Length: 173
Image (cartoon, rainbow, N blue to C red):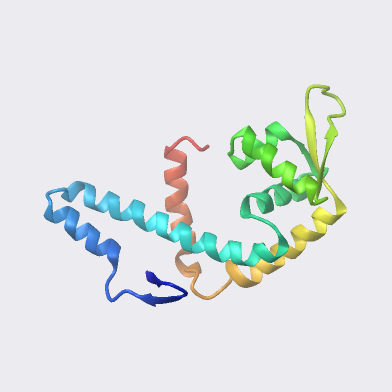
């Protein structure tokens, strides 16, 4: 873990999560110490990976959530999905879908269109510009994040299985 010292980061001479775990154990919270270390490690790993992703997507004027939406539409058979299905598939609140679609629509990357058979529903439809940007963003992420040194890909499949179990136990699927 790196310590922020203004504009220059320097590594700490110890692992602060291990130190916190030892402190929790010393206070008599032995059983909770492992869980605290696990949660804190996951949160810190999330911060690290998200920062790497955002660094790649920022020049493309995308956030990861908007990138995910573009890719969901790109992977769909027709390049469009009902907004409600977008929320379900991305596991986000309807307000988050509305916000993301609004932003992507302002950028000309998606458009809202009426559902062809359900007058109550609206589709988010990928534009040609959206498809092009999704491909560009995917290439950048593949090159600079998903296959980059420092991402533990050798143990990645094991970690994905463990996290899948956690998500399953939480009722994600």
